[in-house]
Length: 355
Ligand code: ADP
Ligand code: DP6
Ligand code: CO
Image 1 (tube, rainbow, N blue to C red):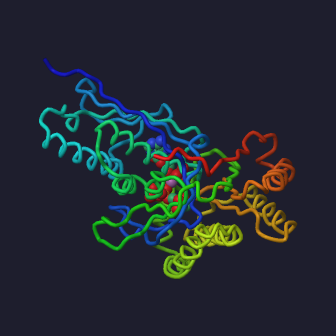
Image 2: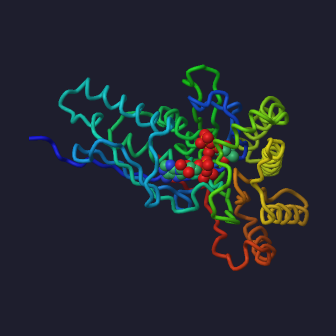
Image 3: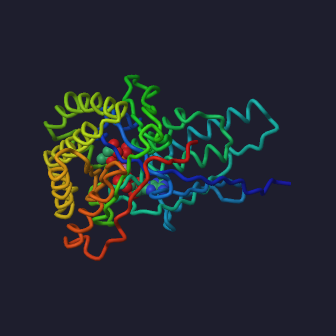
């Protein structure tokens, strides 16, 4: 009799917010970047994806993905690459041990939920593909390391490679043409800098007008600033950021974080046609952070924006009152945040579930 068992595994993955940004692909097929990047993985207790992967001979012939209740197209090359690589690792296990069920041949059904806005510049593709890859790897009981999984997740969405690790994570752009060395590397665990915090300001939960994938493609094709950014600005910022994290030097961390965000958004503006990810509310947040730092006489808070209007502010726990107080009092009266006090979340970047 045919085996009608439904095999399944569930996992969660956190978002990561880049302090040195990935923007540009040197190989769109393998999803290889034009520059290295570095991010902070936020706590799973805040912004996270929960994904269940199941397979069964009873599922019909087409793999499927349900995201927040809506069926998604899984025929795209990027999702297909993840499925293919994970299936082939499972097939190798099955070939080595014929007693294992042949899960690699079964149809996959993926169900995923993001507990934060999708496609709004809060790294849903990062948490989403990290969770998707890990759920299938768990389903297949693969003995793969986080580094191996990061290379598979990278092919789903570049930023996803960094969400497989907690703490301070670099994505080393690598140099191999086949992408075999383009992977995430932990620079320091979250416990290294336990008082680091992040405030997330949701200015708009709407889906962005230009996806990250499309935006960076136009940037690479049209922006001259981009070349300088990839070749000169980012390598310098990577070096400074790694030093800032190792030394727990918040002033340097904050300065590079803000200059990076500005450089990235300047490059978006230099793209033709221009890409506007920031809005008036985003710019108001920048001004509040400037005012906080001016009052303190040093950098105690740092803003950053990914490809969307939503702001993430990094700061150290001891400055919680000054930072959160200023943000709430000033932005409480700004359009976009009015009556949205509950949208200001603080994330504990320190106590991650280490895997
Ligand atoms: P973001 O800034 O949120 O990362 P992107 O433009 O990079 O926005 O990517 C958004 C896309 O990522 C979504 O349209 C969807 O295709 C994919 N995505 C988001 N969440 C998930 C998820 N949980 N599982 C699979 N794919 C996801
Ligand atoms: C601005 O990883 O979403 O958030 O690889 O095309 O899926 P794809 O792009 P994605 O780009 C993220 C861009 C960014 C910066 C970053 O996270 O490093
Ligand atoms: Co993304």
